[in-house]
Length: 181
Image (tube, rainbow, N blue to C red; front, side):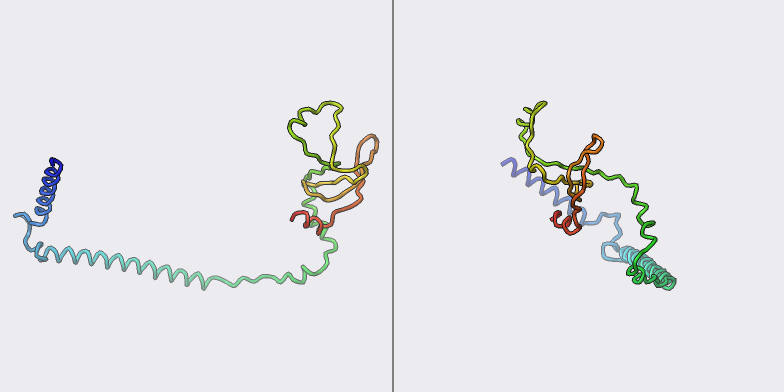
């Protein structure tokens, strides 16, 4: 019940404050309250301010339009040389020169004898002399990878006590594309 009394008292205070705002004091100009000279002058001032802002905005738009027109008159149509015939013609001596810039790019080349999959437990049990079974049969070709992509197959050879690979099959570009999918 005391809560209702507090709310009623608060509502009365708010109503009184609103009434004070609606009723002018003695020092207020009664012409302003009736829409007299003072109210008219503030409306006129606001209208003039809006008119200035709109005129300024319109002036900016006109200036941008003039600048755009000026730039479009200065612009020239792009003229490109037709390179169709050059692209279709065979390249003879400048092909080598065009490829020279890529000759110094390093590549990772690896030969893979075979693969297997081990559990961590099996890997930890490996020791010196252990045999790991691979997925390839004896005599099957090794696979040659360049930057992780299969490019050739070959057979293992020993030359001057070093291993090497004699290439027996180069992967065609069509086969390489099929391997990607």
